[in-house]
Image 1: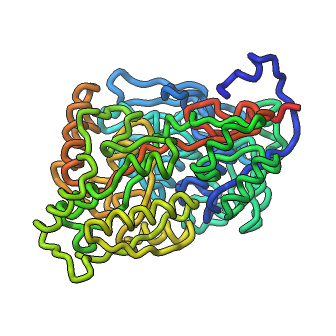
Image 2: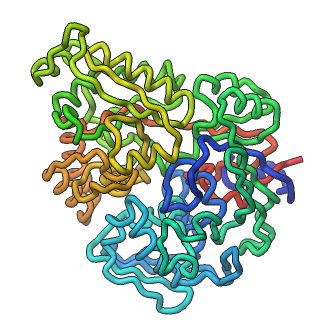
Image 3: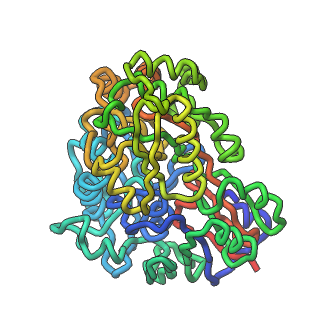
Length: 511
Protein backbone atom coordinates (compact mmCIF):
# COMPACT_ATOMS: atom_id res chain seq x y z
CA UNK A 1 0.00 0.00 0.00
CA UNK A 2 1.47 3.34 -1.05
CA UNK A 3 1.76 6.40 1.18
CA UNK A 4 -1.56 7.95 2.06
CA UNK A 5 -3.61 5.02 0.75
CA UNK A 6 -5.08 4.22 4.14
CA UNK A 7 -6.32 7.76 4.73
CA UNK A 8 -7.50 8.01 1.12
CA UNK A 9 -9.73 5.00 1.77
CA UNK A 10 -11.13 6.62 4.90
CA UNK A 11 -9.19 4.40 7.30
CA UNK A 12 -7.98 6.33 10.32
CA UNK A 13 -4.67 5.09 11.76
CA UNK A 14 -5.16 3.04 14.90
CA UNK A 15 -2.77 3.37 17.80
CA UNK A 16 -1.43 0.30 19.57
CA UNK A 17 -0.87 -3.35 18.92
CA UNK A 18 2.08 -5.57 18.14
CA UNK A 19 3.17 -6.44 14.64
CA UNK A 20 4.35 -10.02 14.41
CA UNK A 21 6.73 -10.62 11.52
CA UNK A 22 9.34 -13.16 10.46
CA UNK A 23 13.05 -12.74 9.74
CA UNK A 24 15.03 -15.18 7.59
CA UNK A 25 17.80 -15.92 8.35
CA UNK A 26 18.72 -14.59 11.79
CA UNK A 27 21.32 -11.82 11.37
CA UNK A 28 24.56 -11.84 13.38
CA UNK A 29 24.09 -8.21 14.56
CA UNK A 30 21.75 -5.29 13.85
CA UNK A 31 24.24 -2.45 13.29
CA UNK A 32 24.07 -1.15 9.72
CA UNK A 33 27.57 -0.56 8.42
CA UNK A 34 29.15 -3.24 10.56
CA UNK A 35 26.73 -5.71 8.97
CA UNK A 36 24.91 -5.08 5.69
CA UNK A 37 23.20 -8.40 5.06
CA UNK A 38 19.57 -8.39 3.98
CA UNK A 39 17.99 -9.29 7.35
CA UNK A 40 19.90 -6.50 9.12
CA UNK A 41 18.68 -4.00 6.53
CA UNK A 42 15.07 -5.00 7.27
CA UNK A 43 15.14 -4.67 11.05
CA UNK A 44 17.69 -1.93 11.69
CA UNK A 45 15.93 0.93 9.79
CA UNK A 46 13.15 0.79 12.38
CA UNK A 47 15.79 1.94 14.89
CA UNK A 48 18.20 3.91 12.68
CA UNK A 49 17.36 6.64 10.22
CA UNK A 50 19.09 8.36 7.34
CA UNK A 51 18.90 11.96 6.25
CA UNK A 52 16.58 10.95 3.41
CA UNK A 53 14.58 8.13 1.92
CA UNK A 54 13.26 7.71 -1.62
CA UNK A 55 10.11 7.29 -3.68
CA UNK A 56 9.73 4.37 -6.14
CA UNK A 57 11.12 6.72 -8.82
CA UNK A 58 14.06 7.58 -6.52
CA UNK A 59 12.99 11.11 -5.68
CA UNK A 60 14.31 12.14 -2.22
CA UNK A 61 11.97 12.33 0.79
CA UNK A 62 12.98 14.22 3.99
CA UNK A 63 13.74 12.19 7.12
CA UNK A 64 16.42 13.57 9.47
CA UNK A 65 17.13 16.31 6.94
CA UNK A 66 14.25 18.71 6.39
CA UNK A 67 15.72 20.31 3.27
CA UNK A 68 18.85 20.37 1.13
CA UNK A 69 20.46 22.49 -1.53
CA UNK A 70 22.77 21.36 -4.31
CA UNK A 71 25.14 23.62 -6.22
CA UNK A 72 24.74 23.74 -10.03
CA UNK A 73 28.01 21.87 -10.48
CA UNK A 74 26.89 19.02 -8.15
CA UNK A 75 29.87 19.60 -5.85
CA UNK A 76 28.30 21.29 -2.80
CA UNK A 77 25.49 19.69 -0.79
CA UNK A 78 24.02 21.49 2.23
CA UNK A 79 21.56 19.70 4.52
CA UNK A 80 19.31 21.38 7.07
CA UNK A 81 18.70 18.94 9.90
CA UNK A 82 15.53 18.35 11.86
CA UNK A 83 15.60 19.97 15.28
CA UNK A 84 14.56 18.40 18.60
CA UNK A 85 15.61 14.91 17.53
CA UNK A 86 17.14 12.74 20.24
CA UNK A 87 18.92 9.42 20.31
CA UNK A 88 17.21 6.59 22.16
CA UNK A 89 19.47 7.31 25.15
CA UNK A 90 18.19 10.89 25.33
CA UNK A 91 21.23 12.68 23.89
CA UNK A 92 20.51 15.24 21.13
CA UNK A 93 21.11 14.40 17.48
CA UNK A 94 23.29 17.08 15.86
CA UNK A 95 25.37 17.86 12.81
CA UNK A 96 28.41 16.40 14.57
CA UNK A 97 26.72 12.99 14.50
CA UNK A 98 26.17 13.34 10.76
CA UNK A 99 29.78 14.24 10.05
CA UNK A 100 31.02 11.40 12.27
CA UNK A 101 28.66 8.91 10.60
CA UNK A 102 29.77 9.90 7.10
CA UNK A 103 33.45 10.72 7.50
CA UNK A 104 34.50 8.17 10.10
CA UNK A 105 32.06 5.34 10.88
CA UNK A 106 30.79 4.39 7.42
CA UNK A 107 34.10 5.27 5.77
CA UNK A 108 35.71 2.54 7.86
CA UNK A 109 33.12 -0.22 8.06
CA UNK A 110 30.65 0.05 5.17
CA UNK A 111 31.65 -1.84 2.00
CA UNK A 112 30.74 0.87 -0.49
CA UNK A 113 30.89 4.08 1.55
CA UNK A 114 34.65 4.59 1.34
CA UNK A 115 34.68 4.83 -2.44
CA UNK A 116 31.86 7.39 -2.41
CA UNK A 117 32.63 9.42 0.69
CA UNK A 118 36.33 9.70 -0.21
CA UNK A 119 35.10 12.20 -2.80
CA UNK A 120 34.28 14.60 0.04
CA UNK A 121 36.87 17.37 0.30
CA UNK A 122 35.23 19.32 3.11
CA UNK A 123 32.66 18.28 5.72
CA UNK A 124 31.64 20.97 8.16
CA UNK A 125 28.89 21.93 10.57
CA UNK A 126 28.25 25.70 10.41
CA UNK A 127 25.74 25.22 13.24
CA UNK A 128 24.27 22.22 15.14
CA UNK A 129 21.56 21.73 12.52
CA UNK A 130 23.41 22.35 9.27
CA UNK A 131 25.86 20.09 7.44
CA UNK A 132 27.85 21.17 4.40
CA UNK A 133 29.70 18.72 2.16
CA UNK A 134 31.97 19.96 -0.62
CA UNK A 135 33.10 17.30 -3.07
CA UNK A 136 36.40 17.12 -4.93
CA UNK A 137 34.50 16.68 -8.17
CA UNK A 138 30.98 16.65 -9.54
CA UNK A 139 29.07 13.58 -8.39
CA UNK A 140 25.47 13.34 -9.53
CA UNK A 141 24.17 10.40 -7.41
CA UNK A 142 25.49 11.68 -4.06
CA UNK A 143 22.01 12.09 -2.51
CA UNK A 144 21.24 8.40 -3.06
CA UNK A 145 23.79 7.56 -0.35
CA UNK A 146 21.72 9.05 2.48
CA UNK A 147 19.00 6.48 3.07
CA UNK A 148 19.34 4.56 6.34
CA UNK A 149 20.22 1.33 4.54
CA UNK A 150 23.21 3.03 2.88
CA UNK A 151 24.29 5.50 5.56
CA UNK A 152 22.41 5.13 8.84
CA UNK A 153 23.13 7.96 11.25
CA UNK A 154 25.01 6.65 14.30
CA UNK A 155 25.68 8.34 17.63
CA UNK A 156 29.15 9.85 17.80
CA UNK A 157 29.20 9.67 21.59
CA UNK A 158 28.71 5.89 21.47
CA UNK A 159 31.32 5.05 18.81
CA UNK A 160 33.99 7.71 18.57
CA UNK A 161 37.35 6.47 19.85
CA UNK A 162 36.25 2.82 19.92
CA UNK A 163 36.56 -0.16 17.62
CA UNK A 164 33.37 0.35 15.62
CA UNK A 165 32.88 -3.38 15.13
CA UNK A 166 33.06 -4.30 18.83
CA UNK A 167 31.67 -1.19 20.59
CA UNK A 168 28.92 -2.00 23.15
CA UNK A 169 26.36 -0.14 21.01
CA UNK A 170 26.75 -2.76 18.28
CA UNK A 171 25.13 -5.34 20.57
CA UNK A 172 22.46 -2.96 21.88
CA UNK A 173 21.69 -0.54 19.04
CA UNK A 174 20.84 3.10 19.73
CA UNK A 175 19.29 5.17 16.95
CA UNK A 176 16.80 7.99 16.40
CA UNK A 177 14.04 5.89 14.84
CA UNK A 178 10.43 5.27 15.87
CA UNK A 179 11.33 1.94 17.49
CA UNK A 180 14.10 1.14 19.93
CA UNK A 181 15.84 -2.11 20.72
CA UNK A 182 14.09 -4.07 23.51
CA UNK A 183 15.34 -7.67 23.53
CA UNK A 184 16.84 -10.42 21.42
CA UNK A 185 16.44 -14.07 22.30
CA UNK A 186 18.87 -15.70 19.91
CA UNK A 187 17.24 -18.32 17.75
CA UNK A 188 13.78 -17.19 18.87
CA UNK A 189 12.86 -13.53 18.30
CA UNK A 190 13.93 -9.88 18.16
CA UNK A 191 11.60 -7.37 19.82
CA UNK A 192 11.53 -3.65 19.13
CA UNK A 193 9.40 -1.32 21.25
CA UNK A 194 7.81 2.04 20.59
CA UNK A 195 10.12 5.04 21.06
CA UNK A 196 8.09 7.37 23.32
CA UNK A 197 10.23 10.40 22.44
CA UNK A 198 10.18 9.99 18.66
CA UNK A 199 10.35 13.27 16.76
CA UNK A 200 7.15 12.64 14.77
CA UNK A 201 4.37 13.51 17.18
CA UNK A 202 1.91 10.68 17.75
CA UNK A 203 4.04 8.12 15.97
CA UNK A 204 4.77 5.30 15.65
CA UNK A 205 1.31 3.77 15.84
CA UNK A 206 2.50 0.29 16.78
CA UNK A 207 3.60 -0.52 20.33
CA UNK A 208 5.98 -3.32 19.34
CA UNK A 209 7.42 -5.16 16.37
CA UNK A 210 8.47 -8.76 16.93
CA UNK A 211 10.61 -10.52 14.34
CA UNK A 212 10.35 -14.26 14.85
CA UNK A 213 13.20 -16.54 13.82
CA UNK A 214 11.58 -19.60 12.21
CA UNK A 215 14.15 -21.78 10.39
CA UNK A 216 11.62 -24.14 8.75
CA UNK A 217 10.02 -22.74 5.60
CA UNK A 218 6.73 -24.62 6.00
CA UNK A 219 6.39 -23.39 9.58
CA UNK A 220 6.84 -19.84 8.29
CA UNK A 221 4.11 -20.40 5.72
CA UNK A 222 1.75 -21.84 8.35
CA UNK A 223 2.40 -18.92 10.71
CA UNK A 224 1.39 -16.50 7.96
CA UNK A 225 -1.67 -18.45 6.81
CA UNK A 226 -2.95 -18.91 10.36
CA UNK A 227 -2.51 -15.25 11.31
CA UNK A 228 0.21 -15.88 13.91
CA UNK A 229 2.27 -13.35 11.96
CA UNK A 230 0.98 -10.44 9.89
CA UNK A 231 4.01 -9.79 7.67
CA UNK A 232 6.68 -11.66 5.75
CA UNK A 233 9.21 -10.30 3.27
CA UNK A 234 12.36 -11.06 1.29
CA UNK A 235 13.18 -14.78 1.63
CA UNK A 236 10.68 -15.58 4.42
CA UNK A 237 8.25 -17.38 2.12
CA UNK A 238 9.74 -19.67 -0.48
CA UNK A 239 8.92 -18.70 -4.10
CA UNK A 240 7.16 -22.02 -4.71
CA UNK A 241 4.71 -21.16 -1.90
CA UNK A 242 3.82 -17.69 -3.20
CA UNK A 243 1.10 -18.76 -5.68
CA UNK A 244 -0.86 -20.31 -2.80
CA UNK A 245 -0.43 -17.13 -0.74
CA UNK A 246 -1.91 -15.05 -3.57
CA UNK A 247 -5.10 -17.09 -3.35
CA UNK A 248 -5.63 -16.45 0.38
CA UNK A 249 -8.42 -13.87 0.89
CA UNK A 250 -6.84 -12.42 4.05
CA UNK A 251 -3.41 -11.80 2.51
CA UNK A 252 -1.94 -9.23 0.14
CA UNK A 253 1.12 -10.08 -1.98
CA UNK A 254 3.27 -7.33 -3.47
CA UNK A 255 6.64 -7.22 -5.23
CA UNK A 256 6.80 -3.41 -5.00
CA UNK A 257 9.19 -1.64 -2.66
CA UNK A 258 12.47 -2.92 -4.14
CA UNK A 259 12.93 -0.09 -6.64
CA UNK A 260 15.81 1.50 -4.73
CA UNK A 261 17.66 -1.79 -4.29
CA UNK A 262 17.16 -3.60 -7.62
CA UNK A 263 18.80 -6.76 -6.22
CA UNK A 264 20.68 -8.94 -8.68
CA UNK A 265 21.93 -12.44 -7.89
CA UNK A 266 25.00 -14.21 -9.23
CA UNK A 267 27.35 -17.12 -8.76
CA UNK A 268 30.20 -15.60 -6.75
CA UNK A 269 33.60 -16.71 -8.09
CA UNK A 270 36.93 -16.47 -6.28
CA UNK A 271 39.39 -15.69 -9.09
CA UNK A 272 42.34 -16.72 -6.90
CA UNK A 273 41.16 -20.34 -7.12
CA UNK A 274 42.29 -22.16 -10.28
CA UNK A 275 40.88 -22.36 -12.88
CA UNK A 276 38.41 -19.53 -12.08
CA UNK A 277 40.95 -16.90 -13.10
CA UNK A 278 40.50 -18.02 -16.73
CA UNK A 279 37.75 -16.08 -18.52
CA UNK A 280 37.08 -19.06 -20.81
CA UNK A 281 36.19 -21.20 -17.79
CA UNK A 282 33.87 -18.52 -16.41
CA UNK A 283 32.23 -18.10 -19.83
CA UNK A 284 31.68 -21.85 -20.06
CA UNK A 285 30.13 -22.00 -16.60
CA UNK A 286 27.80 -19.15 -17.56
CA UNK A 287 26.76 -20.92 -20.77
CA UNK A 288 26.00 -24.12 -18.83
CA UNK A 289 23.32 -22.39 -16.72
CA UNK A 290 19.72 -22.00 -17.95
CA UNK A 291 18.52 -18.75 -16.39
CA UNK A 292 14.99 -19.18 -17.73
CA UNK A 293 14.73 -22.48 -15.85
CA UNK A 294 15.89 -20.76 -12.64
CA UNK A 295 13.38 -17.92 -13.06
CA UNK A 296 10.40 -20.10 -13.92
CA UNK A 297 10.99 -23.40 -12.12
CA UNK A 298 12.76 -22.25 -8.96
CA UNK A 299 11.38 -18.71 -8.52
CA UNK A 300 7.98 -19.30 -10.16
CA UNK A 301 8.19 -16.13 -12.21
CA UNK A 302 9.08 -13.85 -9.29
CA UNK A 303 11.88 -11.86 -10.87
CA UNK A 304 13.46 -12.44 -14.27
CA UNK A 305 16.70 -13.70 -15.82
CA UNK A 306 19.67 -11.34 -15.56
CA UNK A 307 21.07 -10.22 -18.91
CA UNK A 308 24.08 -8.25 -17.71
CA UNK A 309 25.64 -6.94 -14.47
CA UNK A 310 23.33 -3.91 -14.35
CA UNK A 311 19.70 -4.60 -13.49
CA UNK A 312 17.11 -3.40 -15.97
CA UNK A 313 15.56 -1.24 -13.22
CA UNK A 314 18.86 0.56 -12.52
CA UNK A 315 19.82 3.78 -14.30
CA UNK A 316 22.14 3.41 -17.32
CA UNK A 317 21.21 -0.22 -18.01
CA UNK A 318 21.87 -0.93 -21.71
CA UNK A 319 19.47 -3.55 -23.06
CA UNK A 320 21.64 -4.02 -26.15
CA UNK A 321 24.34 -5.67 -24.00
CA UNK A 322 23.30 -9.21 -23.12
CA UNK A 323 24.83 -12.49 -22.03
CA UNK A 324 24.99 -15.34 -24.57
CA UNK A 325 22.15 -17.84 -24.27
CA UNK A 326 22.35 -21.23 -22.56
CA UNK A 327 24.53 -23.49 -24.75
CA UNK A 328 26.03 -26.75 -23.47
CA UNK A 329 27.91 -27.52 -26.69
CA UNK A 330 29.68 -24.16 -26.70
CA UNK A 331 30.47 -24.47 -22.98
CA UNK A 332 32.17 -27.81 -23.54
CA UNK A 333 34.15 -26.39 -26.46
CA UNK A 334 35.44 -23.52 -24.31
CA UNK A 335 36.54 -25.89 -21.56
CA UNK A 336 38.31 -28.09 -24.11
CA UNK A 337 40.09 -25.05 -25.51
CA UNK A 338 41.12 -24.03 -21.98
CA UNK A 339 42.87 -27.41 -21.61
CA UNK A 340 40.48 -29.00 -19.11
CA UNK A 341 39.88 -32.46 -20.53
CA UNK A 342 37.47 -34.81 -18.71
CA UNK A 343 38.86 -37.82 -16.84
CA UNK A 344 37.46 -41.35 -17.04
CA UNK A 345 34.50 -40.28 -14.87
CA UNK A 346 33.79 -37.32 -17.15
CA UNK A 347 35.07 -34.76 -14.62
CA UNK A 348 37.28 -31.92 -15.80
CA UNK A 349 37.83 -30.38 -12.35
CA UNK A 350 36.08 -29.99 -8.97
CA UNK A 351 34.96 -26.82 -7.20
CA UNK A 352 33.54 -26.26 -3.74
CA UNK A 353 30.30 -24.31 -3.48
CA UNK A 354 29.29 -22.45 -0.31
CA UNK A 355 25.47 -22.58 -0.26
CA UNK A 356 23.79 -19.25 0.49
CA UNK A 357 21.95 -19.90 3.82
CA UNK A 358 18.87 -17.79 3.09
CA UNK A 359 16.21 -20.44 2.72
CA UNK A 360 15.28 -23.58 0.85
CA UNK A 361 15.13 -22.00 -2.61
CA UNK A 362 18.82 -21.15 -2.41
CA UNK A 363 19.59 -24.76 -1.51
CA UNK A 364 17.54 -25.84 -4.53
CA UNK A 365 19.49 -23.38 -6.65
CA UNK A 366 22.77 -24.90 -5.44
CA UNK A 367 21.51 -28.36 -6.41
CA UNK A 368 20.51 -27.06 -9.84
CA UNK A 369 23.95 -25.47 -10.33
CA UNK A 370 25.60 -28.76 -9.40
CA UNK A 371 23.50 -30.61 -12.00
CA UNK A 372 24.05 -27.96 -14.69
CA UNK A 373 27.81 -27.78 -14.28
CA UNK A 374 28.07 -31.58 -14.17
CA UNK A 375 26.77 -31.56 -17.76
CA UNK A 376 30.00 -29.84 -18.82
CA UNK A 377 32.27 -31.91 -16.60
CA UNK A 378 32.55 -29.62 -13.59
CA UNK A 379 31.92 -31.28 -10.23
CA UNK A 380 30.46 -29.01 -7.57
CA UNK A 381 30.81 -30.01 -3.92
CA UNK A 382 28.20 -28.27 -1.73
CA UNK A 383 29.10 -26.82 1.68
CA UNK A 384 26.55 -25.60 4.25
CA UNK A 385 26.94 -22.83 6.83
CA UNK A 386 24.95 -20.19 8.75
CA UNK A 387 24.45 -16.56 7.72
CA UNK A 388 27.17 -15.13 9.95
CA UNK A 389 29.75 -17.70 8.89
CA UNK A 390 28.80 -17.24 5.24
CA UNK A 391 29.46 -13.48 5.47
CA UNK A 392 32.75 -14.05 7.30
CA UNK A 393 34.00 -16.60 4.78
CA UNK A 394 33.07 -14.49 1.75
CA UNK A 395 34.69 -11.45 3.36
CA UNK A 396 37.87 -13.41 4.15
CA UNK A 397 38.02 -14.96 0.63
CA UNK A 398 37.62 -18.41 2.22
CA UNK A 399 35.48 -19.84 -0.55
CA UNK A 400 35.73 -21.08 -4.12
CA UNK A 401 32.20 -20.44 -5.40
CA UNK A 402 28.99 -19.33 -3.72
CA UNK A 403 25.83 -17.41 -4.58
CA UNK A 404 25.32 -13.80 -3.64
CA UNK A 405 22.77 -11.10 -4.36
CA UNK A 406 23.69 -7.45 -4.10
CA UNK A 407 21.69 -4.24 -4.14
CA UNK A 408 22.35 -1.63 -6.84
CA UNK A 409 20.95 1.46 -5.10
CA UNK A 410 19.63 3.18 -8.21
CA UNK A 411 22.98 3.93 -9.87
CA UNK A 412 25.85 1.71 -11.09
CA UNK A 413 28.42 3.90 -9.35
CA UNK A 414 26.76 3.12 -6.02
CA UNK A 415 25.84 -0.53 -6.32
CA UNK A 416 27.64 -2.10 -9.30
CA UNK A 417 31.11 -0.55 -9.40
CA UNK A 418 32.08 -1.85 -5.95
CA UNK A 419 32.06 -5.48 -7.15
CA UNK A 420 34.41 -5.00 -10.11
CA UNK A 421 36.96 -2.21 -9.52
CA UNK A 422 40.40 -3.33 -8.39
CA UNK A 423 40.63 -0.52 -5.81
CA UNK A 424 37.82 -2.22 -3.89
CA UNK A 425 39.43 -5.65 -3.54
CA UNK A 426 39.01 -5.92 0.22
CA UNK A 427 38.48 -8.55 2.87
CA UNK A 428 35.02 -7.11 3.46
CA UNK A 429 31.74 -8.73 2.38
CA UNK A 430 30.00 -7.06 -0.60
CA UNK A 431 33.20 -5.55 -2.00
CA UNK A 432 35.23 -7.00 -4.89
CA UNK A 433 35.76 -10.21 -2.93
CA UNK A 434 36.20 -12.18 -6.15
CA UNK A 435 39.44 -10.35 -6.91
CA UNK A 436 38.58 -9.41 -10.51
CA UNK A 437 40.96 -6.81 -11.95
CA UNK A 438 40.78 -5.06 -15.31
CA UNK A 439 42.40 -1.60 -15.72
CA UNK A 440 40.01 -0.72 -18.55
CA UNK A 441 37.02 -1.45 -16.33
CA UNK A 442 38.58 0.64 -13.55
CA UNK A 443 39.02 3.55 -15.96
CA UNK A 444 35.48 3.35 -17.35
CA UNK A 445 33.91 3.32 -13.89
CA UNK A 446 36.09 6.33 -13.00
CA UNK A 447 34.88 8.15 -16.11
CA UNK A 448 31.25 7.42 -15.26
CA UNK A 449 31.79 8.58 -11.70
CA UNK A 450 33.21 11.96 -12.70
CA UNK A 451 31.26 12.70 -15.90
CA UNK A 452 29.28 15.92 -15.78
CA UNK A 453 26.39 14.78 -17.99
CA UNK A 454 24.10 11.75 -18.07
CA UNK A 455 25.03 11.11 -21.71
CA UNK A 456 28.73 10.85 -20.86
CA UNK A 457 27.94 8.51 -17.99
CA UNK A 458 25.82 6.33 -20.27
CA UNK A 459 28.67 6.01 -22.77
CA UNK A 460 31.07 4.85 -20.06
CA UNK A 461 28.55 2.49 -18.46
CA UNK A 462 27.64 0.90 -21.80
CA UNK A 463 31.33 0.23 -22.49
CA UNK A 464 31.85 -1.29 -19.06
CA UNK A 465 28.79 -3.52 -19.45
CA UNK A 466 30.20 -4.86 -22.72
CA UNK A 467 33.55 -5.74 -21.14
CA UNK A 468 32.01 -7.36 -18.07
CA UNK A 469 29.67 -9.48 -20.20
CA UNK A 470 32.75 -10.65 -22.10
CA UNK A 471 34.88 -11.31 -18.99
CA UNK A 472 32.07 -12.76 -16.81
CA UNK A 473 33.79 -11.95 -13.49
CA UNK A 474 30.65 -13.22 -11.75
CA UNK A 475 27.92 -15.39 -13.29
CA UNK A 476 24.79 -13.24 -13.14
CA UNK A 477 21.58 -15.20 -12.61
CA UNK A 478 18.43 -13.25 -11.73
CA UNK A 479 16.99 -9.81 -11.24
CA UNK A 480 15.32 -10.53 -7.92
CA UNK A 481 11.77 -9.49 -7.01
CA UNK A 482 10.99 -10.52 -3.47
CA UNK A 483 7.38 -10.82 -2.26
CA UNK A 484 6.09 -8.82 0.67
CA UNK A 485 3.07 -10.68 2.06
CA UNK A 486 0.90 -8.98 4.64
CA UNK A 487 -2.36 -9.42 6.46
CA UNK A 488 -4.86 -7.05 4.84
CA UNK A 489 -5.47 -5.43 8.23
CA UNK A 490 -1.88 -4.17 8.21
CA UNK A 491 -1.74 -0.76 6.55
CA UNK A 492 0.98 1.45 5.03
CA UNK A 493 3.51 -1.36 4.72
CA UNK A 494 4.95 -0.26 1.37
CA UNK A 495 5.05 3.51 1.09
CA UNK A 496 8.38 4.19 -0.64
CA UNK A 497 10.87 2.67 -3.04
CA UNK A 498 12.40 0.83 -0.09
CA UNK A 499 9.36 -1.19 0.98
CA UNK A 500 9.88 -3.02 4.29
CA UNK A 501 13.29 -1.37 4.77
CA UNK A 502 11.74 1.90 6.00
CA UNK A 503 11.11 2.95 9.60
CA UNK A 504 7.44 1.81 9.84
CA UNK A 505 6.42 4.95 11.73
CA UNK A 506 3.20 5.03 9.67
CA UNK A 507 2.35 1.32 9.82
CA UNK A 508 -0.72 0.35 11.81
CA UNK A 509 -3.09 -2.55 12.36
CA UNK A 510 -6.66 -1.70 11.39
CA UNK A 511 -9.38 -3.18 13.53
